[in-house]
Length: 540
Image (cartoon, rainbow, N blue to C red; front, side, top):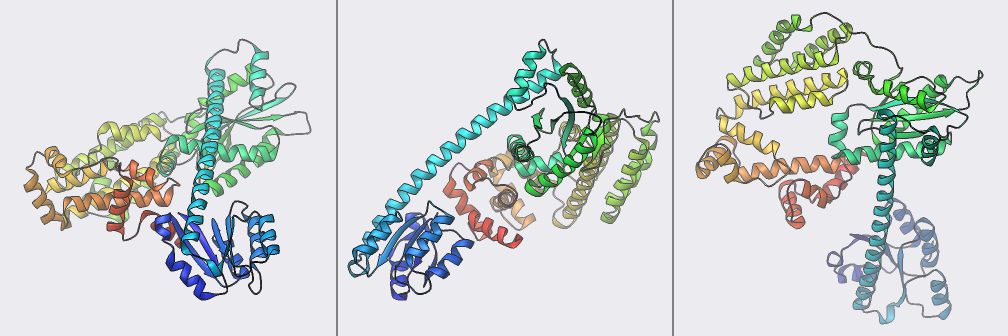
């Protein structure tokens, strides 16, 4: 929707135009009516219009002065002058300001303004199309360049360097100039990767967001530092230096990386951690150091969020972690079955401190945690207190993706607290496991269309009987429940991402954009864009 502003000290004219033009049909929103240019300019600085229809002769600031001021702020605004003055010198001044049209109030027909607004919309649509096309081309170029950089760093780590000169030349094509210089390699990690991935929806968007801000910072620093993506969660930052006894590359790097952490977190709300390697003078030496940094997963596992550490050889406990398993599972089982929510976080923290103190191997810790979670899940299922469709494979995959103990701790707290909430909900809401299974099925398939017949078939139930049972047990129809769950997910995406409403609708299985907006409004009381605006305002 294009934003339109009317400015005139003749209030009846403002009222007449605001009511005569079908703004919604034109794809426009009338954002304000103002009695003089000064008030309009102040309002525009809070909400910039796309189109301005203004009188010329007004107190405090006339129309021509308003146009000049707005053009400095946003050159692409479309302007139409609406005035009682027919003198040629006003028209001349308007033409010098590239005003699109000059309408006289004495002979004004709303249809004339309507036609002009339609022309404005057509030109704005065309301009927006060109901008989006150019933007997409820029993104394609950047993505291709990032893919080449990723391929370069991967081949450097995993394949022999056959020609040092060729390697140096290719590195230089990416902005890394190492001839006659030393290089300090740094492994860069995204902290809290599960929540980061959920917030940015796709890995490509997440990586693009991080790369964008890093590239901007490196350009401003102008020290020749280059970032090479290895995978979605890891990258290498290569910091060139002249070397010499007077400089300490490590100390300089710590200062630089700390600044990097603060800037990235403030800009895109992503936390980074770093492991700093040893300075390298030759490409072959750098290759070995990069490979060692890649193998630092053991050190990475016990790092806290926003850490900056030197690369070190980790030492792991040789004790048997599973000797303490019975004690752990008994404590958690008692808390879950007893509904003791207050005990969950302290209990998880207690065992995480134990694991951190002893420093067991990461794969052993993950096996221990997986067994603990699955055993407790099966116990609750056997008591018909819990139904969770997450398979062993899903839980195992989630654990494998987590690269720090700190993230595992957050994941465990969330898992157990969610389990407790479901247990309590089952006790209050329904003793019928079919209803709980249906709710779980919906939660796992929000990305596509879900029909009552499909879920009934999944539960081996008659659709009519299932429909009546669901309404009786929950107080709402199955379709109402599905719509409510989808709207809740849509609200999360509207709050946490910059995805368009159309893209969010597609992500939730709606191929009809209008139907998705209508459904959202029927559940939430506002359209998706209105919700996003209200949500953004409440956060300011």
